[in-house]
Image 1 (tube, rainbow, N blue to C red):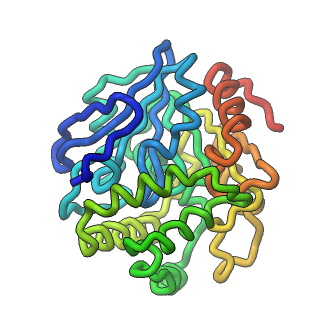
Image 2 (cartoon, rainbow, N blue to C red):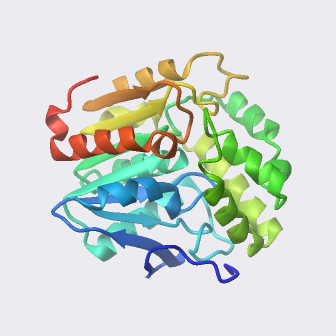
Length: 294
């Protein structure tokens, strides 16, 4: 159920085994395709500011992961490997070529998982504040998950959702109010118990399906973007270090990784600093192997 909610773009649907109907946006054209994968409890329009600009030069697709946005809901084995499998099937069904995979937060961990499973899936990789760069011991993972108040953070109450979105920005200034309204509408059509179950499974997957020790196997040219004032990475109660340290250490493990750090920017860099992010992505996609450190 979506309560009649519609995206401001033509919305396409693809039936995928074990996932049901997957909703996606497909804008622009060009020799290069960029597939955007959103983060935890978000939706395809989390990439709206990027699609608006980048679709002038590239084919841009953004999907709603199962259980999110306009895609089918249901009792599914939500995890990083499950989502990665859906992304792989989506790419294969649409026969996407000359592909750049882009993932934000949890979406970053998903696309890394997909590439580790299928190394020739894409030509290039863009990671924006990716989950997976921060390492948790089993004890830390258990403590971290226990500390997250899922019932409060993801309740259907407007104040709770608003707080969760605003914490992803360094300077909020109401720039994502439309996102909050959209997600509230989408959430209102989702049984609360089912939604909380999906969120809990996603968090468990991020913590217990690590990619850090396998980053050296990702051979694609990779652009990594972090906001230096990210309030979500790292989890400072467990790891009192800077975002810069997490970003630099993770990028260093990628054989062809290039890092861009954005000052005065939070976790949702592709929205808060859309112009800079779009410039970085454009330059990287056009010349990934000559994309110098900045």
